[in-house]
Structures are given as C-alpha cells and as structure tokens.
Image (cartoon, rainbow, N blue to C red):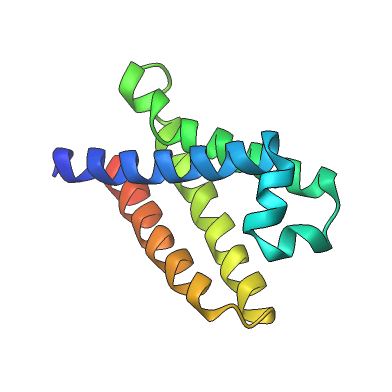
Length: 117
C-alpha cells in the first residue's frame, strides 16, 4: 500500500508542480496552451499556478522529509478541492475532455488523503 501511495503522490506532485510552474512563471506559454488563460487576469492565473505549485510540493515533501507529515493529506485534500472547482469550471465552458482528467486527479488526491491520514 505504501508503494501505491508514493506512486500516487509522485504523479500528483509532478503534474501539479509542472502545471503550477507554467501558470505562475511562464504566463505567455500558458496563454498559448490553455485557452481559458486569455480570458482571466494575469494575477489570477499566477495565483492559481502558485497554489498548484505549493499543493504539488505539499503532497510530496512533508511525508518524504518527515517534517510535519500531517500536511501531506491536507495538501491532497486541497488539491482535491481544486480539482472539483476545475471540473465545474471546465463543465461551464463545455471542455469535457478536461473534466475526465480532473476526475482522475481528484481520485488520486482522495486516495492519498485517505491513505496518509
């Protein structure tokens, strides 16, 4: 079970770190790859990116280092909430292919949150 949890944490962490870094530090590249970014302020997109980046780090680092490991399931819950909100956002925009990924990442986040609680 521990190995499965680490794999899920690694996937979640890497996906959110990469997505967060692009939104937070490569705004122009994010505008090209994500149509919704053009419709929202740069500040909001950077805030979302920093939130995803910190969530991605939070799902891996606390448990890996042994420093405040209780933060790992909290970060997983936070990422799950982000995925619920993202699924609603994409549903409103009729971006159905993105909702599938949101549900997959939500399931991984729930698995990590429950497994590490």
